[in-house]
Structure formats: structure tokens, C-alpha cells
Amino acid sequence: MKRIPSAVSLCLLATLAWLAPTAAQAHLVVTGMGPLYDGVSHFALSPEDFLPVIALGFFAGLRGPRHARSLSWMIPVSWFVGGILATMTLTPPAITLSATTAVLFLLAGGLLAANPELSIAACVGLGATLGIVRGMADLAEASNDRAHLLTLLGMCVAIFLVSALAASVTLPLRRLWVITATRVCGSWLAALGLLLAGWIVRYGAIIN
Image (cartoon, rainbow, N blue to C red; front, top):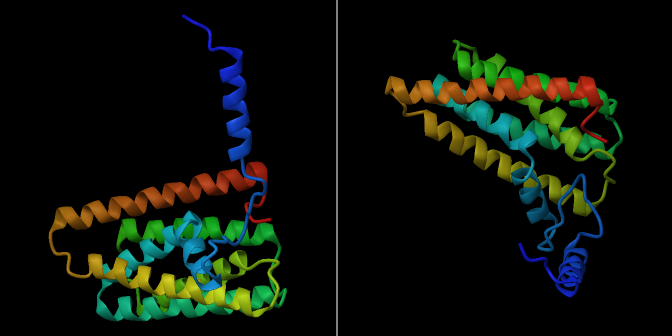
């Protein structure tokens, strides 16, 4: 096997070094299109945000139109409240938010997998808890200024649309095999919650 010439190797290394990011952003994503779009992209690029929202949307759709409508409004409203509390520095410790996120993964995935008869009040309460916890986590250490409020608003708009679309997918389902496939997705999310809990126990909070 021929060796790559040293000049080519140096050029490759120089190119990789030039392409390497100069800073890592652990919280809010900056798209360059304004804070509103930053919020949309942050939600879209955060699995810990959109996965439980989709799972609860699927579950609400299986339960019926009233569950779906109530949850589609409650999650973004409570998310906004959680974000506002975070900008006012009224947030619990990071380990609490991380542990609650893992529990919410388990609950959302478990409910979708089991597909039990759950009241609207209980479903809305779970959605409100998810919104407040993740809203606090997303805006943790963010200042109370117009840009962050617009970012939070962008998140909430994306959350409403995703939740409503997820519910609309399962709302008309009548075939058993399609419903079963949806419930299997819930079991995967519950398993992911267990992995997340194990990660927290081993390495600590996932929110810094």
C-alpha cells in the first residue's frame, strides 16, 4: 500500500483544522435568521424536547379529539411559562431537571406503549409538567431580554405544530397493526428514558 505524501497529509490536517468549530453552543442554537427561527431550530435539533412531545401527541391522538386539542395547547403554553420562570432564575437544580426529563421520557413512552384509558385532566397534567420542565431546561441561565423571549416564542410555535401534527397522525388510525407499530415506538422511547436515567446516575446532570 502506498503511503500518502506528507504534503497531502499536511493539507488535509490544515483543512480539518480550518473547518473545526471555534465554539460549542450547549444551549440555544443561533441560525443567523433571528431569535424566532433560533427557537424553532433549537426545538428541532433537541431530541430531549421533540421526542416526548411527539410521543404525547401520538398518545393523545389515540385517545381522541378532545385529548388531542387539550394537549396541543397545554404543552406550548406551559413551555412558555417554564421558559419565563427560567429567565427569572426560578429554576430547580440541574440534576432535578435532568432526572425529571428521564422520568418524563419513561412516562410518555410507557403511556404510548400501554395505551391506557387516561382522563383528559391527567393527560393535560403530564403535558403541563413536560412543558414547564423542558422550558426551564431550555432557557436555563438565559437573560430576560427580548431576544430570548422571541426564541422561546419560536419554540412554542414549533411545539404546537409538532404536537398537533403528531396527534393528527394517530387520530384516524383504526387498523390494529398500525396502532401496534405506534405503540412499539412508545416502548422504544421508554427504553431511551431508562438509558437516560442510567446516564444521569453514572455521569450526573445532562443540563449544565
